[in-house]
Image (cartoon, rainbow, N blue to C red; front, side, top):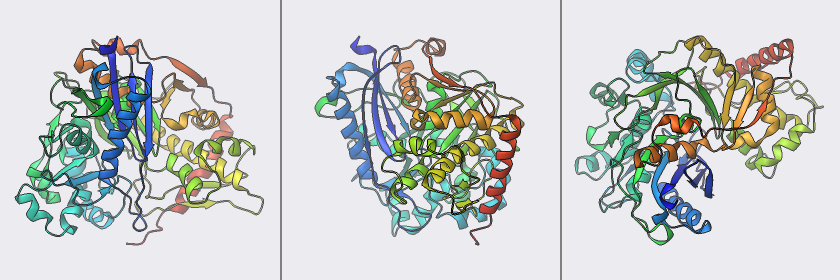
Length: 503
């Protein structure tokens, strides 16, 4: 039984989680720790890579210890991570050259405005439009703003990676032989990888002035040897093979077993991310979605997806908690929002980092409209939950237009899905049933599946399908008229968030 256990390290935007799953996909152990959000100035978001590396060690050791396990009990470990967040470090010392620049960060807005002249090239090669979201412009900013860094590159004293690369490099030895690798899903979010060749693209490297020698090796998402083995002490002691690595949203599509074209999932985390499997087809979007990798298993063909990325959903709840302090914990928002029957006509557009899909407006900023003296913090709490659902509606409409697919049911996952009121609102606003699986942390589960497939714990994708089970389903209650009126009002609120940032 012990060799049927698989670990999953989920390094997210606000916390790092380690989970252990058994051969049936059931949770055996869990440990989670938050890390600091560093906000040097408006629009800038950073993380301390050293703190993240320490959290990784702590949650692995703590999770195993709490369950009475050691590293020897694990057949493999899978990695999943916040995507696009950019780290540059010295491989000889293990020290970062700069704080990690987080995917939400907007400091590259001027460079992104210049990239509009290359929109066609970026969309054709990468499936991604010019946006502050992606890694390449962040990497270029670090290379251009850290004194002496480009010289360090020529001396072999600087390398780049998204968070998966940083975590794997540290877990596999760091300066003492750590693996400098990434997988196709994370590489595909840099704007430096060609979606068709799944290799670094020379023309894109020249566009962003990125030297090839800083880049990690690109591997498939599930691989028996490419990612190396852990070198940890304490409860994690044994050298455990790392055999899976995917960006968090790609891990979730695996965890939700959306393996057939036309199947989709929506993850509710710091942001919201809906992915629709398009199989072997690279489907260009005409509706503001991203064309992206879904996953690629070892010795198998790549699978692609359409993605709708929403920057601010769960982080809007954190804003209510941390900045406005109208709730003490994220879990309190459900009862507070439920204490009023509706928002009283108030709408909240949380465009803190601009608007992502399907709008792609870096000039947008957050607005709350429709307020009167009647409104209370309960109405704002409810408007925050509705904002999550309305943004998802916009993405789902775009997905239906691009792919010609109208979903009969939406599979949901992520931490916010424990909020039953939110899930009912989502069904009401979409007009389709919403279903939550028994294992809602499907990002970690997908990383475990990728690792376990490569390690022989599971034989194939079909064997994983049988493990997915529904926990609860919500049916729409709103009438069509109520749904469309509310969405039209939301669209008016979005219009008022635009053109706020003047270049």
